Length: 243
Length: 243
Image 1 (tube, rainbow over the protein chains, first blue to last red):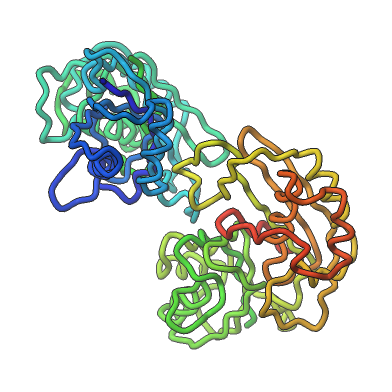
Image 2 (image 1 turned 135 degrees about the vertical axis):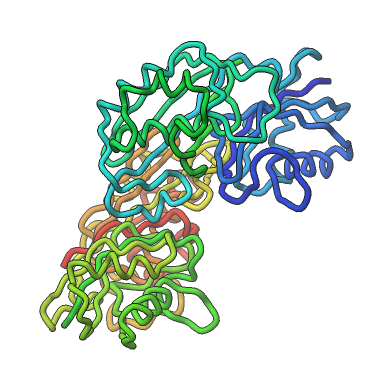
């Protein structure tokens, strides 16, 4: 059986999704939980990597299993083997051709900034505290230049291995609610650190250190040096994956 | 100078407010931060004790100091010596007779329950996950019996040392917002664990394990055994102290 899991995690205490030696990752913790439960060694396929401290409100994974546990009860059973910062929300049987990574059509990320003079004790792990002025109007204007299909190689950190660096962004909305500035971005896929570099660039433009009229030019330059900083990880949330 | 601090803290990683041997507490961490900054050994008076894992959205403290740091800049300076789960929001000079504990006239606490089948990875430290049905109507009805002046000795955990166990509750509101049930309670003071025992009792009534028409009787019994369980600490937030 090919089993799809929909889950969420608070990434604060993890070195991201992907299994790596000598680090606690979400993939390794769930893989071990399933092994404890079913005595199976499974290959858990995730919908994508997330970095250390990045969160997932909705994350999708799949694995093949011969478990006799009723699948509609499986998420409760796995949860009893998980720490409480990872929650499996549902488990269901899907077609054998479903692959959480390759089948994904769209992803939506949310990025949160706390734009206030003082930090907030409750948001330390869930937002980027940025205390300088930000011009939301300039950021919204610049955001429009990111929409559509572009080669985003200038918005990727070193170390990626992908066939193409062309991606399509369907929407990029910026909203201010009190001291919180929220970015919501949907695309057909994202390069390594791409959302965080887009946010860092828009923040540079909102703050005036980068020219907000130059976004299209910066994208076209395909030069990482032209773009802004990589926004810190704790403000980033994977919100949804569409298949 | 008598200096008043208004602050907030995420209590997750602290053994409560009060200094105790071999435990990291909010009072000890702030006292040390001020000592590092001013080289003074100060006596930091807090508005009340909070238990391990209990949070404070607004907490007030005071201390006497001869620091030459401008008081309107003092909170920034102290924050640089604090971990990011404690934030001093303001510092100001107050009259010598101001005592954060004894001068308090009213306190407001908020208690949050996540009332859903599945837990939430992001609320593990900020709500009580209670998965059984709760009848909000019964809880609201029972809540009315707590209003006014009563001897709440039956709603206190052992170990308190107070002159009187009579307290006045001015308001006790219960609101449901999606899966979150929020309690907001204001009184002239609260006994040890009193808010958490009131919430535990109301939850018992909402769930039907306790008779929701018996709240007045349970209070009058002055018997801890008659009341409900002590709700867990992570759902409790000190919201405001009025002087």
